[in-house]
Image 1 (cartoon, rainbow, N blue to C red):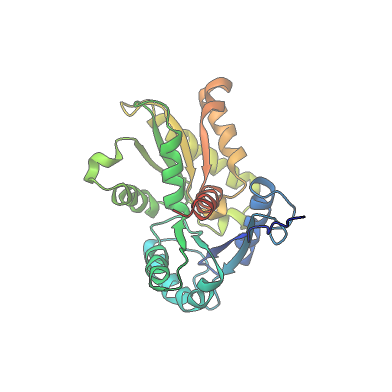
Image 2 (tube, rainbow, N blue to C red):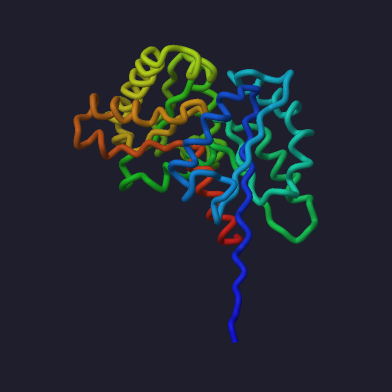
Length: 269
């Protein structure tokens, strides 16, 4: 007698852009289609279905500080809560310790329908991925981000996320910034953006010549940096030479976040 098998339902992941920039949201789609999914359209992929949310207007056009992140939470949260039942996992695509992550984790935990839902942010996902990629005990990871305010905010965020006080950041080389904001990454001429990215990357790599050891992983510290990994790679090669520059891991938090969430959904942890 013939038997039939039922294909598992695709994992449904909601990616949240908590600023109002539709162009930034759209820049994420080809990144994920080309690198994580097995078909040209996320809606037809057999294992993963990705949908996107952009902050409504009026909202925060560019999240340039922790205060902006907090403000965007109050704007976005009421619109996101009704979507939770339709998704298995949520990724907050803002490179910060964004309050939406904890708010949505609490909201998902309160839904009593017997199904787990997973929430993370691209900041948290990139830190976890970088730690997994470090080679030996004498290597470190760092972050290339946008405005100078993020140097302190993200450094404190790493310590808070890893726990254990300042000793938790022994593998962390620090943050270097471009002086640009998130919207500049899309609006300014590519040559100007690329030069700023290279300068910040090279400064970060030079930190690896301290007792922390070489920088083996670099996090792209803004969702708007999607697609700029090749520019960072060029800077690594220019600073370290072809062989060593090619060894540096460049971690895109959006890709890292989707990968982690897919694994959690599939494993059912």
